[in-house]
Image (tube, rainbow over all chains, first blue to last red; front, top):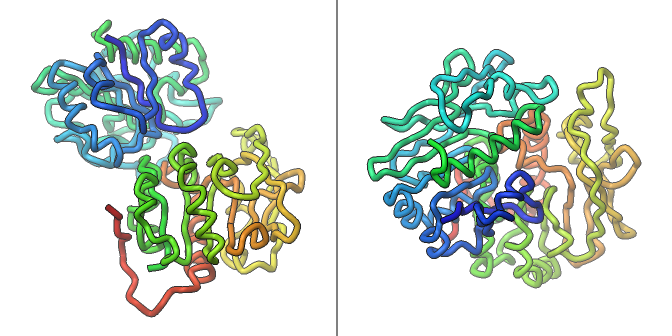
Length: 200
Length: 217
């Protein structure tokens, strides 16, 4: 089974998963064309910041079924709809300063293993691209990376009772930050590998 | 009701339309897929925000043209592929310099072209200055409000292509504001949306304003 990558915006490609698409590991589907079959045939799910969260609610049962059979979902962005019971609404930083964008690895995680999280703090010397807030940590979820001195859970991994997992990143796709193209590709590859349960 | 906004549902749209800061500026939020159920002619203004996927709008091209031809006002902001579903638009994308502001004293080149226009009682040049995404070849008779570094239009009002009015810009304020990302975009909306209400929403009546828009469907 491959990973269902929900393509929500118009007219642009997804270059960092291009090879995974070509290799058959990722199935890229326009969000407006999603059907129950796409979810049923997927091992995991990747969504981007452009996800139509209102429209995606109509697939809630399919997403829940995927999670209940042990499937995984990589979510990027600000959660502003309760797409799964237990998810809260995104909390932005209030008037952030540079120190509030500091990133701290809280636990090791296979997606981020071996990557110095601090190298993702800045793009060309400018901080804030990785994320500027957090999606609330569900009970029993594990915070992976902390934001700012309060170590707000900007990335977390939630193992649901049914066996599925959600990896939440409260910002633009986490494979887009930093200045090192190899690291970006590595993170994109690991997102696919994690969603398909090849790693961790 | 007088301002209808298309609601494509990404988090930056949700934040822009539903959060308290701007919610009172919109009366009805309509999903692109439900636009065929809306009586557009009941609204003085229809707004299509940044990054509305064009493939969710092309089926409504004829309805939008009909809305304009009965005198409606359409506002469309940037990163939108609007030429695929709106009449008379000639748009040329330009490469975006995301980092221009890192050079001390740098000037992106945005200029207000019609300083006498009422919109600029509310907006200064710095409130239009964040990124450039492209420019328009505007029809004769259109009113150019702002231009890029080459003097090409990036914000204009077209009352000649149709019997109605199109306010078009390649600026993308909803995307950035709704991402909590760029203060200039919030300043832009702080000026633009009240201007929309007071100057473009000409059919508004004395009925009480809602604090939140209604969601169709």
